[in-house]
Image 1 (cartoon, one colour):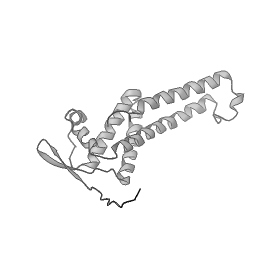
Image 2 (tube, rainbow, N blue to C red):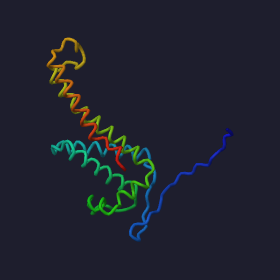
Image 3 (spheres, helix red, strand yellow):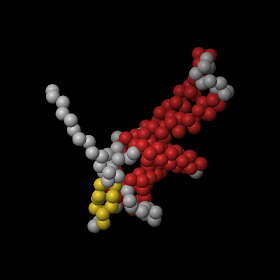
Image 4 (cartoon, rainbow, N blue to C red):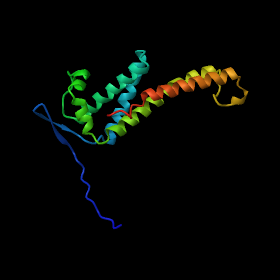
Length: 171
């Protein structure tokens, strides 16, 4: 097969129509904005954990946080006084996410980050189970009850990861 050369041009912004108003969307989340998003999601995660959020409410809250952060960063729309529910029910968030080419990549990265943060937060719990020793060091010397507690805890982490992984949903 003969190879051809393509010209690659970066699309700087897209102009979209919203109820007769034009606004701009940056269709690529660049590395600088990715780092900012990941940092903000970690901050939001820590705040929500302090508020004792867990499970589904935590996941839904972080998903909303991601949507708002992305819409704020990638558009020229002032969202200061707009509620998340209004952005969702009006279709604004779907419109914006649908015009960002690498949104799903960033969402997958955020899901992995959340899983890592959850796992990291459970490490002290694992240490408590094993009296502060290395969890896997000398595991053959652990009692069946200690091993079962470790298995149960790791299953919990896996189940929580399954609830965080929303990459199978549409944007």
